[in-house]
Structures are given as C-alpha cells and as structure tokens.
Image 1: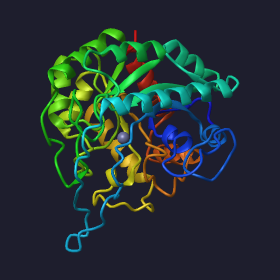
Image 2 (image 1 turned 90 degrees about the vertical axis):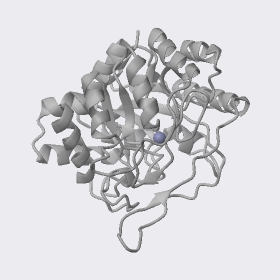
Image 3 (image 1 turned 120 degrees about the vertical axis):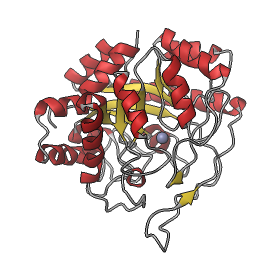
Length: 355
Ligand SMILES: [Zn+2]
C-alpha cells in the first residue's frame, strides 16, 4: 500500500452486500475472503483508505439486470422501468438498521475503522491508516418532508445524502437505467426537495447528485451554497447512459468547485454500454482523462461502486486498486495529480461543504 496515495472512495455498497445481503448469511469483514470486492484485509492491501459507505433501501422489485447487446448495432440498448417510490414507513427502520450495522462495525474494529464527521477526522484517519467511513444515504426515502429525521440522522453522523436513487421520492426523481439515453428523464425537485437542499447546506451535509435526473441536477445547482458533487457516475460523451453526466453538467461541477467520482461499473464506462467484466482498467482512466481535460484534475476523483457494480475483472477487488494507479502513472499522471484524484479533491470539497 502506498501511504502517500490513500484511496478515498466516493461510493461503495459494502453495507448491502456484507452485512445486509439479499440472500444468505452476512459475510465476514475482518477476515480475508474471495467474495465480493471488499473486506478489511483487501482494503488495506489495495490502499483503500475509506469513503462513502451507502445505506440503501432496496426496492424489492426483481433485479432483472441489464439486457445484452442489440443484435444489429452490437451495443447495449435497454430501458429498465423506474421502480416505484418506497413507502417512508418501510424506509425508516431499514435505514436505522443500516446505520446501526455501521456503528457495530466501527465498535468491533478496535480502532481500525472510524465513522468520520469532520474534515479534521478525515485527515487524521488518512494519515494514520484508519479506515475513514462517511455515513451516506443513497436516496432520501427515510427523511420526512418536515426534515425531522434529517436533524436526528445528522446528530448520528450523517454527512452525505443522495437526493434520490433511481426512483422517485417526495424530494426528487432519479433516472431510470437507460442506454443510450439522456439523463433528462423527468421533473425536477419538489418544494420539499428545495428545502432539503437548503437544510443540508445549513447543517453541513453533502448533497450527492448521483442517480438524480437532469432537471433535479439543475434545480440543485441553482439553489445550493455548496460545491456540486456526484459521488459515482461517468461521462455521458463516452458512454451514453442516463447515469452519466453531460458536458454541460460536468462544466457546472467544475465551475462550482465540486467533484465527480468516476464509477467503475463497466456498463457506465464502455462506449457500447455492455456488461462485460473483461473491460480493461484503462476504460476507467479514459473517463478520468476526459473530466481532467475538460474541467481540471481538481474536479475528478473515484467513486468505485464496489460491492454494487460489475467492475473490470483486471481490477478484481479492493486489493486491485494499485492497478488503476499504475495505469494512470503509465499515462503520465504525476504524484501531485494522483494525490488529487485519490483523496485530496474529496478533502477539499468536504472542507467547503461540512461545518
Ligand atoms: Zn448507485
């Protein structure tokens, strides 16, 4: 592990797949296994220093996955239906369960993992090889329109909130998974959604625009006092998925001093949108290059989506992270640039966002 380049990651679904698996028993986290992408030994080996750990309320609809190639074009062509809104009465206990799992993980870790609430805690953790965990909600279903739950979860440690996952809620509308398609798929923020953004600004909770549709993105850009952040997505010009950002959106992220964490999910990286695990790591770097050239290296970071995505086989798991750093080095990124992409950009943006 390179101590100079700790990787702070914009998104993982470790909580989902390790502690709250859809099928079967929870996986061990403190012992090395070959299941999924992460456990503590593999994180340490790959220099995975922490990141945004998502609490997510599953939709409960069958997961059909992404259809394959169109026989004529050889490219992906799909329009998955938007799952219905989740009942907040159901979302709240699931979310409390997720938050409690992370507290238990921290307690069991004997100081190896810390739920961080300030930038000073983040920097201290990065410098001392303590895994820095940011409590993040992927979708605001557990938050009531009066925002009472937001204040309670803030006190519990919530520091990052995705306004929507890929479904509607009372605040915002997420994008359906479509390819090829623009992210402009529906209405923008509701009045409650605008209040949510402003209250997050006041409290110092980062607003995450991953999964939100274009109108919701622009509504947020208009009212937020914080840099625009998209924790895990890619470049629409390189892979025309609804989950990726258009050039105009990238420019807005750059102008606001914000950051985009590049998603490692192969379906959001490849030009053909296909779910092929044999996609090379260089596809991730292609998206990093594009963002760095268009809006600057200060505005691109990593949002691997490990445990929630099909990542390049070449990378394998959290232990394979150095392969991506090597690929960037081979393309001419120096240590200064690598520090920005691996962690410094996140530290800067959180410093401007958190209180
Ligand atoms: Zn996601």
